[in-house]
Amino acid sequence: MSEQGGGDLPEPKIEQLMAKLRMLQQEKRQLEEEVRDAQSVHDNLQKELADLQTEANELEGIHKDKKDASSKLQLQCEDSEQDLNKQLKQNKTNEQLLERYRCEIEEVKLKHRKLRLRFENQLLQLIEQHKQLDYAFNPKRLPDELKKAEDIKHQLSSAEQVKLAQLHKLDEEVEEAKKQKQFETEDAQILE
Image (tube, rainbow, N blue to C red):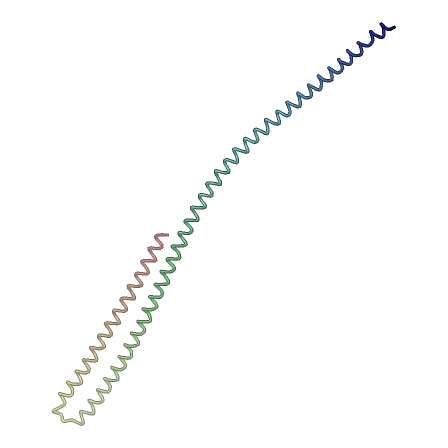
């Protein structure tokens, strides 16, 4: 019985070992499958990472280009703003100058009007005096009195001519200022 009992012992061990071997082989196949799956996932992730890196590089390039373009536009905008401020300042100066010339012209016109009225009044007075003197003085002195009146009239007329020349000169200066402003405006438009 001991032989029989002794002979039975190794058999279950072999079967156990075989079962364990089959189980280990099956686990090995499962592990190899899992390793292949993990490798496939790893490869896919590596490819996706490379694609994302390429895209990131491209986006960095685009971002750099846009940043450079933005800087250039900012500089151009600042230059344009400076030019505009300069032009506005120049326009304001020209408007002030034009207004000053208008005021001067109005002053000269007013002075001329006053001179003309004074001249007319003096002329009327002289005519009246002449009429009075015609009665008061001897007819032989009449030519001398008339000459004096003509001399005064000539002096007043000369003064009026001087004032008219001054007024004409001021008108020309105003026209020149207008032309200058127009040239500057056209130059500014050409530069834009």
